[in-house]
Image (cartoon, rainbow, N blue to C red; front, side, top):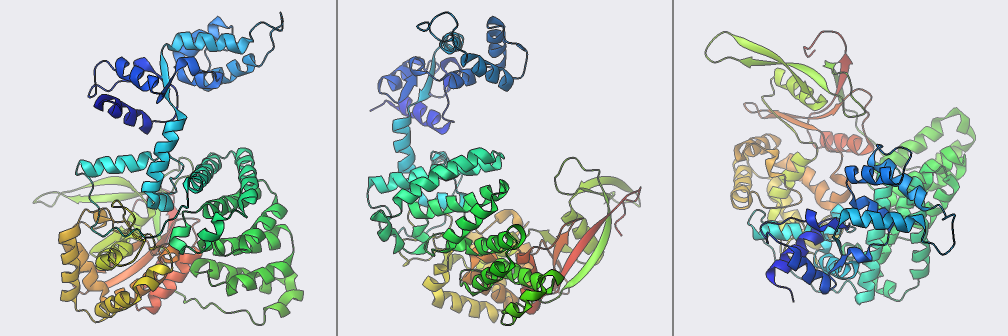
Length: 613
């Protein structure tokens, strides 16, 4: 039982990365000007390790600053004592591997280096792994919902602690709802530990992939696969299988399946296509875990079979099975269909044409394409295209106006084009404009009571079933009633519905609502009045039934004329950018719902022109 100072210091150290820290570098004046007695108390209770337990040279070297490493490098006569920090660390580790030439019993050079490292660093501490793991598990158990969308399960729960702090300081407010926790997800402590271990592993693999360490990622994935194969027949799994999908997310099988899915990408990166195909076939042979990824798996499988293994017949069978799979939705369905059409129409695949006679057709409406030109900024690196545009600012009260050149994105360039064409209002929000409108007009349904297990703690920004088919099934009657109400609503009614939620809920942390997307309540009301209830209810029906697959692909821009209530939805494409399958489907659907939709291609021109043409 620590005094308040000890509790405060432990929480702060827990929040930091799990590294050794120099005691003289730990400063928290708000706790105490002299932290050493508090550090001693934590170390005695085995919540902190001291430098006497520092045995890993790599961890020790990590503790030193660059100047300290250079000093040490000179003592040991390293070849390049003024090199970069990482270079010096590598040189020390290489030196430590050399055997002592004098005698077997003499301490190795590594031990000598480590002793010098500790002398230089002085007193140092690290949070003990045992208690830290327990706190991490408590936080993981407390806020399961976090790990689902952010996949932050691999962090030690620091995110959740920050959230609690923000709430306690009054800087963050969550929506009001009733916590209704009926079902036990984990059967016992071991079950939770297995889940936490898998979640950490998945996080480590994701980190290795992001950093491009494909060999390391492959090693971790192979180890995980071995563990999962041993676990597959564990009795707890039969209990997990009968949980609703939104709770199955938090089972060890779901996480290991996600790891196998990461494995497919790793194998492809390493050009191991046959292994990738086998892994995909294994993933598709079950429909309990990660069902929302099945579209991606079928698409990958067809690609690998056709392009890499040159097995066209199997690729066609795969496409047929994929199109018949009820879990394959929107963009992935179109992608499979278009792949089939490409194979069918390719001269080299003539002998397979007979296999396509009963292929289901996925019709997509054509939309208008326009092209505008803008001057491109010379590119630095691989980021998004940057354009130059003249910004004409009117000077107060006179004929004078100043012209300055501003840098802007393709979307901002397009917004200017539409403004010049009489659309006085415009928002670049990609999907978030519509998703925010959905979150506001469906607020009370999203946070309604009486559905068990979707709100499991007081710090959720969405119900756990929001991104599953259960969301619609669990609320079918109220959703249909709301869609009907919107369908027949007048502009005044829509404006009032928006105002009621905006004035009572603005600023609360809700996953679907970006409060800053609009400049004011009046701007939202103006847009909703242009879009109209019939159109909105059509879009909301798609989102309600399958938010997981429909939240992506909505157009970049919404532009409207306030005086005539005309609006246009625009997908903007910079040089070398193509429409994705999800975008093609949404543009087609929005057109069917009566909207004017357009794809605006921005073409780069050189020279001195900054004018938009």
